[in-house]
Length: 115
Image (cartoon, rainbow, N blue to C red; front, side, top):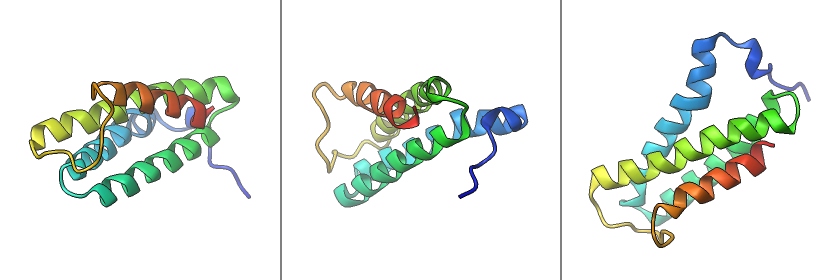
């Protein structure tokens, strides 16, 4: 299996897109569906986990992957909550109490999976 190119080999705009924009957009979509469908929210969350594992493959060593997971996991979790709040619908899936803990959970999982 051929590994993807390292993140450091991409131009800076591509790096920003992969590390910041993509997790924010995917988190926003996931957050929207939190108020629409529990099943869709859970499927999107699992896809986010798989993406976190994949994100670790384009780094040299676990430390670099963990740093990527730190950034992407926190952005993903925050985007879920922000989009859900903007959408305004009642959550169809159970969130931790207080909901801000979701950011801690997605950050920790991001670090672990990307490392």
